[in-house]
Image (tube, rainbow, N blue to C red; front, side, top):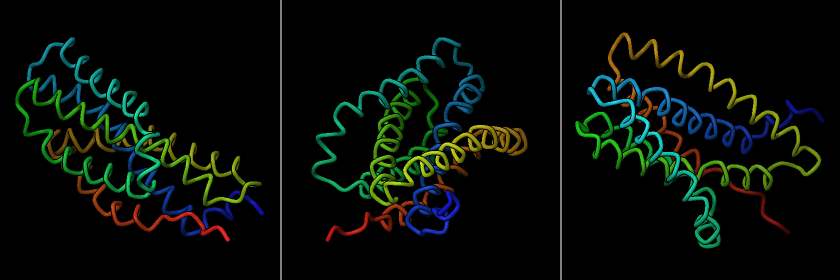
Length: 190
């Protein structure tokens, strides 16, 4: 079997799409916050603090995640993270102050910080053991492609329709992924 046989598996395909959506959120946030911060005439250090709040939250949530993971399935954690991200991308551009943007940035960091560990756990559960390396490779291809393409796409969109519209577009883009996340289930052990 080849790596591409994994893409034919519905569970793996769903997980890859979810991972791509959430990686796009991460990339767009990192790319667009400096733009919206500049638009709001925030200083470079304030913009850096907004991005720092996001990073601290994304790291801190991973410390408590093992306690949560024992009580809630990966799919539920991912669906909640996606729903939170969609809402936050909807309200983020409405925040006019650094404090409001900082709160959104921190909460978004918490939501997006949960994704990678949950995706990795599910990935190892839904793929055959002999194909774990191939599954990880396909995941990396999707994330790296996203890291190149999404900032280009949303940068062009932001220039054409405004930065706020980019946030809203990402929120809308993520929303269908919530249902998709709830449909990713590891195989039942016999």
